Image (cartoon, rainbow, N blue to C red; front, top):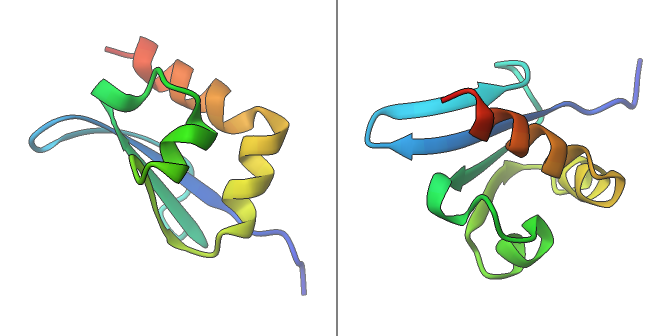
Length: 79
């Protein structure tokens, strides 16, 4: 059994319009609105602008490695 946990990122562009990166069956789902996506994601999490469901470990790993910022930036560019 693997200890690897997965994370899915969702960027909410508007009502009914989301950009998604990551598997549908992810252990953690992190969601942020487009208007908040350019702020530091650690700050966004502390201000409850970056919301999660599931385990926090994968999010903290993605924040500390820079993976979260990279993925959100890529999702912002896919408009």
